[in-house]
Image (cartoon, rainbow, N blue to C red; front, top):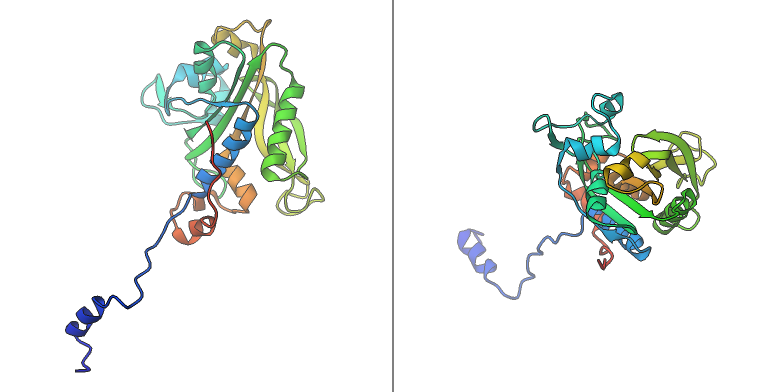
Length: 270
Protein backbone atom coordinates (compact mmCIF):
# COMPACT_ATOMS: atom_id res chain seq x y z
CA UNK A 1 0.00 0.00 0.00
CA UNK A 2 1.17 3.55 -0.79
CA UNK A 3 -1.21 5.38 1.49
CA UNK A 4 1.51 6.76 3.78
CA UNK A 5 -0.59 6.22 6.90
CA UNK A 6 0.34 5.62 10.53
CA UNK A 7 1.32 2.02 9.80
CA UNK A 8 3.96 3.19 7.30
CA UNK A 9 5.33 5.75 9.78
CA UNK A 10 5.66 3.04 12.44
CA UNK A 11 7.43 0.82 9.94
CA UNK A 12 10.04 3.44 8.99
CA UNK A 13 10.49 4.54 12.61
CA UNK A 14 11.78 1.07 13.39
CA UNK A 15 14.13 0.81 10.39
CA UNK A 16 17.64 0.55 11.84
CA UNK A 17 19.22 1.32 8.46
CA UNK A 18 17.83 4.88 8.33
CA UNK A 19 20.01 7.78 9.55
CA UNK A 20 19.35 8.62 13.19
CA UNK A 21 17.84 11.86 14.34
CA UNK A 22 20.62 14.21 15.38
CA UNK A 23 20.45 15.24 19.04
CA UNK A 24 20.92 18.91 19.79
CA UNK A 25 24.17 19.34 21.72
CA UNK A 26 24.92 22.33 23.90
CA UNK A 27 28.14 24.11 24.72
CA UNK A 28 29.86 26.45 27.12
CA UNK A 29 28.01 29.74 27.70
CA UNK A 30 30.04 32.71 26.51
CA UNK A 31 30.11 34.23 30.03
CA UNK A 32 31.41 30.97 31.50
CA UNK A 33 34.05 30.92 28.77
CA UNK A 34 35.15 34.47 29.57
CA UNK A 35 35.30 33.76 33.33
CA UNK A 36 37.43 30.67 32.64
CA UNK A 37 39.80 32.65 30.42
CA UNK A 38 40.14 35.38 33.04
CA UNK A 39 40.74 32.87 35.83
CA UNK A 40 43.44 31.12 33.83
CA UNK A 41 45.31 34.40 33.30
CA UNK A 42 45.14 35.53 36.93
CA UNK A 43 45.95 32.09 38.34
CA UNK A 44 49.05 32.14 36.14
CA UNK A 45 49.99 35.45 37.81
CA UNK A 46 49.79 33.91 41.30
CA UNK A 47 46.25 34.91 42.29
CA UNK A 48 44.00 32.46 44.13
CA UNK A 49 40.21 32.19 44.22
CA UNK A 50 37.96 33.61 46.94
CA UNK A 51 34.18 33.75 47.24
CA UNK A 52 31.54 35.53 49.28
CA UNK A 53 27.74 35.60 49.74
CA UNK A 54 25.37 37.22 47.24
CA UNK A 55 23.09 38.26 50.12
CA UNK A 56 25.32 40.60 52.06
CA UNK A 57 25.35 42.77 55.17
CA UNK A 58 25.21 46.51 54.69
CA UNK A 59 28.35 46.68 56.84
CA UNK A 60 30.49 44.74 54.34
CA UNK A 61 28.89 46.10 51.18
CA UNK A 62 29.11 49.76 52.18
CA UNK A 63 30.35 50.77 55.63
CA UNK A 64 33.55 48.71 55.75
CA UNK A 65 34.34 49.90 52.19
CA UNK A 66 34.28 53.53 53.32
CA UNK A 67 30.69 54.29 52.23
CA UNK A 68 29.40 56.15 55.30
CA UNK A 69 25.73 55.84 56.20
CA UNK A 70 23.61 58.35 54.22
CA UNK A 71 26.59 59.36 52.08
CA UNK A 72 25.62 60.34 48.48
CA UNK A 73 28.15 57.86 47.06
CA UNK A 74 25.71 55.07 47.96
CA UNK A 75 23.13 56.40 45.52
CA UNK A 76 25.18 55.24 42.53
CA UNK A 77 24.82 51.65 43.77
CA UNK A 78 21.12 51.52 44.57
CA UNK A 79 20.29 47.88 45.21
CA UNK A 80 17.64 45.47 46.50
CA UNK A 81 17.18 45.34 50.26
CA UNK A 82 15.98 42.41 52.36
CA UNK A 83 15.78 44.75 55.34
CA UNK A 84 17.68 47.76 56.63
CA UNK A 85 20.85 45.76 57.31
CA UNK A 86 20.73 43.01 54.65
CA UNK A 87 20.86 43.48 50.88
CA UNK A 88 21.87 41.93 47.58
CA UNK A 89 25.50 42.93 47.09
CA UNK A 90 26.20 45.65 44.54
CA UNK A 91 29.80 44.59 43.92
CA UNK A 92 32.25 41.81 44.74
CA UNK A 93 34.31 44.23 46.87
CA UNK A 94 32.77 43.09 50.21
CA UNK A 95 34.88 39.94 49.89
CA UNK A 96 37.96 42.16 50.30
CA UNK A 97 37.15 42.90 53.94
CA UNK A 98 35.74 39.43 54.66
CA UNK A 99 38.93 37.79 53.35
CA UNK A 100 41.32 40.21 55.05
CA UNK A 101 39.59 39.66 58.40
CA UNK A 102 40.52 35.96 58.22
CA UNK A 103 43.91 36.06 56.47
CA UNK A 104 47.17 37.87 56.99
CA UNK A 105 49.27 39.33 54.16
CA UNK A 106 50.49 38.59 51.60
CA UNK A 107 47.05 38.31 49.97
CA UNK A 108 46.54 37.95 46.23
CA UNK A 109 42.98 36.94 45.26
CA UNK A 110 40.36 37.21 42.55
CA UNK A 111 36.64 37.09 43.34
CA UNK A 112 34.27 36.32 40.46
CA UNK A 113 30.59 36.50 41.29
CA UNK A 114 27.11 37.81 40.66
CA UNK A 115 26.10 41.31 41.77
CA UNK A 116 22.84 43.24 41.76
CA UNK A 117 21.75 46.84 41.26
CA UNK A 118 18.39 48.53 40.84
CA UNK A 119 18.93 49.35 37.16
CA UNK A 120 16.51 49.68 34.27
CA UNK A 121 17.73 47.15 31.67
CA UNK A 122 19.07 48.64 28.43
CA UNK A 123 21.81 47.66 25.96
CA UNK A 124 24.58 48.44 28.48
CA UNK A 125 22.89 47.93 31.89
CA UNK A 126 21.29 45.02 33.74
CA UNK A 127 19.89 44.56 37.23
CA UNK A 128 21.92 41.37 37.64
CA UNK A 129 25.41 40.90 36.24
CA UNK A 130 28.86 39.42 36.92
CA UNK A 131 32.01 41.05 38.25
CA UNK A 132 35.53 39.91 39.00
CA UNK A 133 37.30 41.57 41.90
CA UNK A 134 41.07 41.55 42.34
CA UNK A 135 43.01 42.29 45.53
CA UNK A 136 46.72 42.28 46.34
CA UNK A 137 47.95 43.32 49.79
CA UNK A 138 51.51 43.10 51.09
CA UNK A 139 54.35 45.32 52.21
CA UNK A 140 55.41 48.02 49.72
CA UNK A 141 52.75 47.30 47.07
CA UNK A 142 52.62 50.29 44.73
CA UNK A 143 50.57 51.78 41.92
CA UNK A 144 53.26 50.52 39.54
CA UNK A 145 52.43 46.94 40.62
CA UNK A 146 48.77 47.59 39.85
CA UNK A 147 49.54 48.95 36.40
CA UNK A 148 51.84 46.02 35.66
CA UNK A 149 49.22 43.39 36.57
CA UNK A 150 46.41 45.16 34.71
CA UNK A 151 48.52 45.65 31.58
CA UNK A 152 49.53 41.98 31.61
CA UNK A 153 45.89 40.87 31.92
CA UNK A 154 44.67 43.17 29.13
CA UNK A 155 47.38 42.05 26.71
CA UNK A 156 46.86 38.39 27.57
CA UNK A 157 43.09 38.59 27.13
CA UNK A 158 42.65 41.07 24.27
CA UNK A 159 45.96 40.67 22.42
CA UNK A 160 49.57 41.79 22.64
CA UNK A 161 48.89 45.05 20.78
CA UNK A 162 46.38 46.34 23.37
CA UNK A 163 47.46 49.49 25.20
CA UNK A 164 46.37 50.61 28.67
CA UNK A 165 45.91 54.02 30.25
CA UNK A 166 44.78 55.16 33.71
CA UNK A 167 42.46 58.15 34.26
CA UNK A 168 41.94 59.74 37.71
CA UNK A 169 38.58 58.85 39.23
CA UNK A 170 36.84 58.54 42.60
CA UNK A 171 35.96 55.34 44.45
CA UNK A 172 35.33 55.46 48.22
CA UNK A 173 37.32 52.28 48.88
CA UNK A 174 40.51 53.18 46.97
CA UNK A 175 42.84 56.18 47.04
CA UNK A 176 44.21 57.10 44.60
CA UNK A 177 41.59 55.68 42.23
CA UNK A 178 41.49 55.31 38.46
CA UNK A 179 39.36 54.24 35.55
CA UNK A 180 41.30 51.89 33.29
CA UNK A 181 40.96 52.22 29.50
CA UNK A 182 42.31 50.04 26.72
CA UNK A 183 43.00 51.06 23.16
CA UNK A 184 39.97 50.50 20.94
CA UNK A 185 39.97 47.00 19.47
CA UNK A 186 38.12 48.23 16.38
CA UNK A 187 40.24 51.19 15.24
CA UNK A 188 43.46 50.52 17.14
CA UNK A 189 43.31 53.93 18.77
CA UNK A 190 42.74 56.14 15.74
CA UNK A 191 39.11 56.89 16.68
CA UNK A 192 35.81 55.38 15.52
CA UNK A 193 32.11 55.21 16.41
CA UNK A 194 32.66 52.36 18.89
CA UNK A 195 35.08 54.34 21.06
CA UNK A 196 33.36 57.69 20.52
CA UNK A 197 36.25 58.99 18.39
CA UNK A 198 38.55 58.89 21.44
CA UNK A 199 40.56 55.77 20.57
CA UNK A 200 39.97 54.36 24.09
CA UNK A 201 37.38 52.09 25.77
CA UNK A 202 36.81 51.91 29.52
CA UNK A 203 37.21 48.37 30.88
CA UNK A 204 37.49 48.54 34.69
CA UNK A 205 37.97 50.56 37.86
CA UNK A 206 41.02 50.23 40.08
CA UNK A 207 43.11 51.91 42.75
CA UNK A 208 45.15 51.56 45.92
CA UNK A 209 43.25 50.12 48.89
CA UNK A 210 42.05 53.00 51.08
CA UNK A 211 43.64 53.14 54.57
CA UNK A 212 40.15 53.15 56.11
CA UNK A 213 39.39 49.79 54.46
CA UNK A 214 42.64 48.38 55.88
CA UNK A 215 41.63 49.54 59.36
CA UNK A 216 38.16 47.99 59.07
CA UNK A 217 39.86 44.69 58.18
CA UNK A 218 42.28 44.96 61.10
CA UNK A 219 45.39 45.84 59.06
CA UNK A 220 47.88 48.57 59.89
CA UNK A 221 47.87 50.88 56.81
CA UNK A 222 51.34 52.12 57.76
CA UNK A 223 52.69 48.58 57.48
CA UNK A 224 50.71 47.21 54.53
CA UNK A 225 49.54 48.62 51.22
CA UNK A 226 47.61 47.05 48.41
CA UNK A 227 45.59 47.53 45.27
CA UNK A 228 42.15 46.43 44.10
CA UNK A 229 40.36 46.33 40.77
CA UNK A 230 36.90 45.40 39.53
CA UNK A 231 36.08 44.09 36.07
CA UNK A 232 32.58 43.77 34.58
CA UNK A 233 32.50 40.30 33.01
CA UNK A 234 29.59 40.98 30.64
CA UNK A 235 31.31 44.16 29.46
CA UNK A 236 34.54 42.25 28.91
CA UNK A 237 32.68 39.62 26.88
CA UNK A 238 30.95 42.31 24.83
CA UNK A 239 34.28 43.95 24.00
CA UNK A 240 36.05 40.73 23.09
CA UNK A 241 33.26 39.25 20.94
CA UNK A 242 31.69 42.42 19.54
CA UNK A 243 28.33 41.95 21.32
CA UNK A 244 26.17 45.07 21.07
CA UNK A 245 23.56 44.44 23.79
CA UNK A 246 24.10 43.01 27.29
CA UNK A 247 20.58 41.57 27.26
CA UNK A 248 21.64 39.06 24.58
CA UNK A 249 23.83 37.37 27.20
CA UNK A 250 20.83 36.76 29.47
CA UNK A 251 18.09 35.89 26.96
CA UNK A 252 18.96 32.18 26.50
CA UNK A 253 18.51 32.46 22.73
CA UNK A 254 20.28 29.40 21.27
CA UNK A 255 20.60 31.12 17.89
CA UNK A 256 22.86 33.68 19.57
CA UNK A 257 24.63 31.49 22.12
CA UNK A 258 25.33 28.69 19.64
CA UNK A 259 27.99 30.72 17.82
CA UNK A 260 30.26 30.44 20.88
CA UNK A 261 30.06 26.64 21.20
CA UNK A 262 32.67 25.75 18.59
CA UNK A 263 35.57 25.68 21.06
CA UNK A 264 35.92 24.52 24.63
CA UNK A 265 36.62 26.85 27.52
CA UNK A 266 40.21 26.70 28.81
CA UNK A 267 41.09 24.27 31.57
CA UNK A 268 41.51 26.08 34.87
CA UNK A 269 43.63 24.73 37.72
CA UNK A 270 42.63 26.18 41.08
